[in-house]
Image 1 (cartoon, protein in one colour):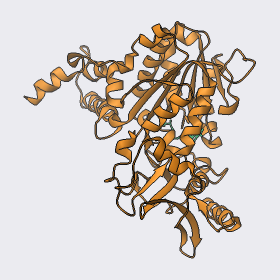
Image 2 (cartoon, protein in one colour):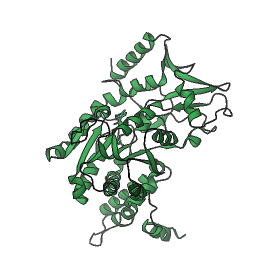
Image 3 (cartoon, protein in one colour):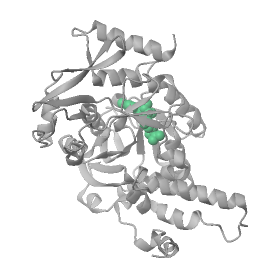
Image 4 (cartoon, protein in one colour):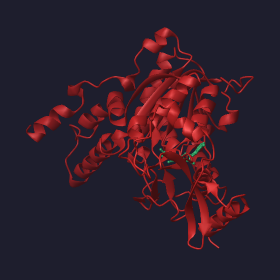
Length: 418
Ligand SMILES: C[S@@+](CC[C@H](N)C(=O)[O-])C[C@H]1O[C@@H](n2cnc3c(N)ncnc32)[C@H](O)[C@@H]1O
């Protein structure tokens, strides 16, 4: 029996042992992605990247991590150069961002680097092993780098209590979209839940009552009125994101929470026209909307409701600092300069087919990070905790508007002849 078959057997068993022969979609997604040894993220190391099923921003080169490091160095300044300064990366994938952040801070911000404590929170033991392999040389150089469970996170000073022990930034890229979601459907103006049952053909959706009143409360809490939505309207609710943000806030003493992901405000997410929700599955660089296909061999995601993160933040002690798009965020952090300078031939560089090709590829990678039709359209939410009024008033570099002429657009506009 292969891994996927073993996983299907485990899920089937869970369904058959349940009282009503069905489990919520959130339970199904949790098992499909994270069941120890069998789930998509638990069993396979080649899930992300060109050899896997999908790529994320750090696969575009070192720029994403390096520009994030620019933001972290700026946060360190904003917080008054604290030591230790903790970066807590949650859901670190292959450890690419961590590697780029550490290298850039060491090379460009040695004072900040000297204060750094880097914590990785990772659910998949397979990916954790890959991260540890990639980052082991930093540990052997004496960098304070550790892997911890979110519930037990402590900063390097060994604070007496794990609560409120972090001064710095807790951040994630494409983490929240990977949390298990509840799947709901509107029938005759009543919110119902899509459960998962099993038939001879495999796993099947089973419409039933809500597993928890929190699902209806979620829409009331966000002032989303579903009454005018079409019958059969389907969408998702990410309750796990709300618990996660509370847990993150509890760890923070002073600093920022930075969340990057694809998603919308609640009004856009739950617009009547988005009648089939945002559930997406990724398999070998293709995407489709059948979560019951390729069980354990495909990623399952749902877009992020950024309004819910903002509102939950308000409830758990986090203040919204700003919300922007990844394209603008990275441009403000210096991607514009990289586009106009570093991706052009250097004065002393001879133009060969190879150098020209390398320059074109680099430009393409940078463009992809900011493309409004792709990664550039991701949301970037920054929240803060425990800041003084002066610290709050200081604008963060990534949230400033990059001046037009430093955006590398001057030459682009000329070249376009517009
Ligand atoms: C889509 S991948 C993104 C990886 C990486 N941040 C990147 O941008 O390439 C999602 C990551 O989040 C991890 N993950 C999912 N749920 C998690 C949780 N509750 N706590 C920590 N890590 C989690 C997954 O194992 C995986 O490493």
